[in-house]
Image (tube, rainbow, N blue to C red):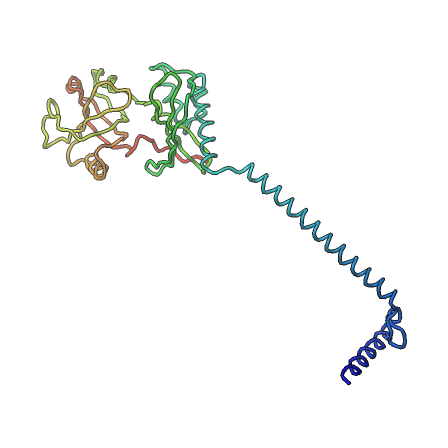
Length: 299
């Protein structure tokens, strides 16, 4: 009985299909399938599905290959930040040290419009080294000098046996300029020039300060003066600076020395001709807590 009921239901469904628009092409009035037409329809549907699946597969493959090609192109163009930084720093160093003279070197330094008169005066009194070949660029590290973001590169020049540290200001994560004043050990006036003057002079001095106890001559009163030994690169003979205790400069130095045993700084000094034979200078101001001068921000 159940079999006859299922057969009757199937036959009724087929007759219903026959009544539908276009159904007579597949089912006759008795509810029987028109086999050739059904097979053709199935074949067409199967072919259509296969084509659609094929098109989707091909499209997916092409999209995948396109994305992979773009990824490969990006990988070829994009390098890790440290590699990009090293390449940029190397380019600046090659340009700076390869320059024929200070005028050409000027294009690679910080705040060239402010540094130009200093370079001109300095190389008027000291020989210009001319182009120098870089043998090796060593370690490059980041540093902060009083809020100025920098990188420090170890550079070995051809014919030298010791690396020199070159400081470059780092702006916008991609631009670098060499701090010429530290690189050249620039002084407004060298200690030798200061001590040679028969008249009192004031000058900025870039040096390293260490607390000391050398009291004599004009600065023999330790209760009145705080003594520091002074030094700077290329200096061959020690000299001394004295700051008046209780002065603003003394307080600034006390604060600067709280977390360190010595201090690389830019100070303002005054000569006393009677003290020159002892290689003594008066410290009247602490300009910067580092050797890096603060120039106006550049875009």
